Image 1 (tube, rainbow, N blue to C red):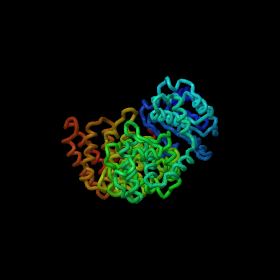
Image 2 (spheres, rainbow, N blue to C red):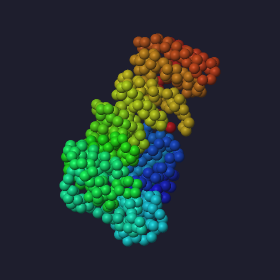
Image 3 (cartoon, rainbow, N blue to C red):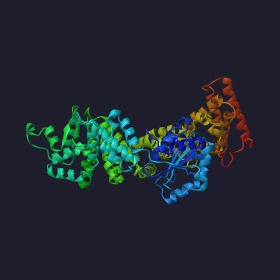
Image 4 (tube, helix red, strand yellow):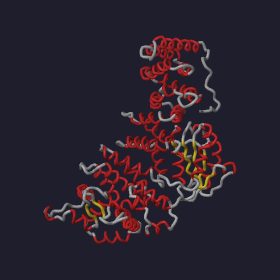
Length: 613
């Protein structure tokens, strides 16, 4: 929940009145969070949320009218843009604003701090100022479950922490440290002790951890130290098994000492400054010590990194009731975090591929999905991984079950904020898949979520080489029900000139290239919908099929006959009265006769730029 920054009320009123607002503010003032909150407040208006990323694969240019659908919520975050990108975006903003206004959508732009802005756009600029740091901290503590009577009292640690104007993200992180300190606090400790522990956890502990590692010279001790840092908060049974697994992964010889002479886990944990809580969960005594340990081994033992990837895959597959989904996700997030912290996105990408190769278990596939999710949600690496997704989906040879991992990531993660990019990547996966239809199903489900996305998919198919895989996709995507639906708008998709051109192009390829058995059920669906629908959409469905068949010059008569036979077969299963279905077949026959007499039943779709609504 956002603490309203200064200027939030002005921004809210301007967005409601004009559909657009441009937010300015110093870095760390919360301007991007404010933008997302403003757009979230308009979710009830319909449409979809879409973060605009001009220049990336799968994104339309800002001046393309097809970018905006009625009621959409659009975020253009250029807070970190250089002068070139900001100048290019400003040139397109007037046209984008006009489209947004016409389609009752909402647009929030986050501009570079104190960047240039033309006079005609100055009206939409609102300066966002930092909210009170103390109010922000208290709001986070409240949301994290810290009792009000605890944090409402003045505290010297909090006062010192907030003396410096800190970014909102830093305040949120400090609040989370206070929450974690509270969860592991001793009896009798209160808010002051929690905050002191949080402040201590923020200190640089590299020398402290390095000294500990130097004292722990034995491999089993270091293995346990690494495992606790990677599985912090996991049950002791998991820690024990994972430590043994790590030793096997690095080919450490097993001990020949009798079992009863081994150190027990409690003694071994005390050697690394960790202990077991009442519920059996293992944690370091010092708050946030786990991140310092992870960073030390990752930075100073680089040869260990590949082994940690293989070890993590083994841990997620452990058959143990304490290896819960949260434990698996936490481990994957920490491994991914180290790759991303050190700028090694390529290593994380390769790891996700390896986890998905061969006969990968469900747990490993879930781990691969979550690893890529972590990368896509990391602000510093998201753009790079969106590009990686594109190259994987469009160009790479995918081994094992990695294609299914990419389907999940595109459909469940990328589509939430970048649906156009997800659509393009799923399209490429659907074209290439064999023996499964998961990518195709995900593609069609995504297209069904938005008129704009369905329009984009049809346009993409019409501009493709119309190979058999493209036609397979088209037959799944050409459902006449959403094409003729006009709820929430003034006209149906099938009434748009651009959509008509796409449908005719694709249907022509289907009728010319595919056997009748493959397309007849889909054509019958069109005839049944025509019998169910009313003018003019019913007429359009017939006209489009006839126009597509008319272009099959060498087999025109054969294709017309096949369409007529399909319409006759559809009469038996059409909704409503038989008379209405027979009427549709008779109208189809009249249009076919007119076409064969070289009389066009309808003029071809206009080539001028259509106005979408």
